[in-house]
Image (cartoon, rainbow, N blue to C red; front, side, top):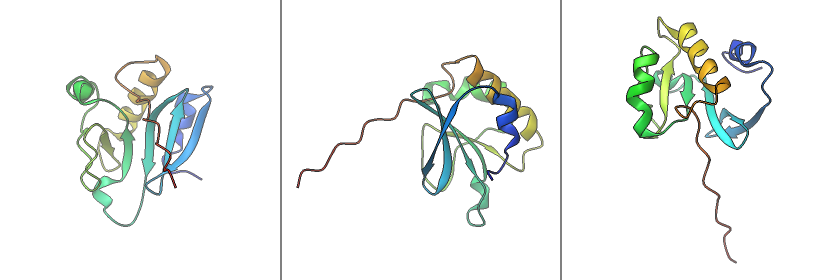
Length: 119
């Protein structure tokens, strides 16, 4: 079971792919990583929904979703966090889901391909 799994109800019927990232649950829509779900006992300040985005979209997203902020522990500069303790958490989740469904440029990044190591 995933934390905050009600986001999947909001995203139905989109086909998402799941992948582990930093020991948390990341989700892809098409070729883009769109969000990750984190709920752990350590560094609880980073628990919530991590939104994959670009720095140029931060202000636009913050104007749409209250309480968004930077992720503290991992130093991910392009990602934003909707903290689980936000008074606007469920409202924010709905907005994130709507942006994903609308294929908004504000949400999602195409991951860089990993280079194969030569042996």
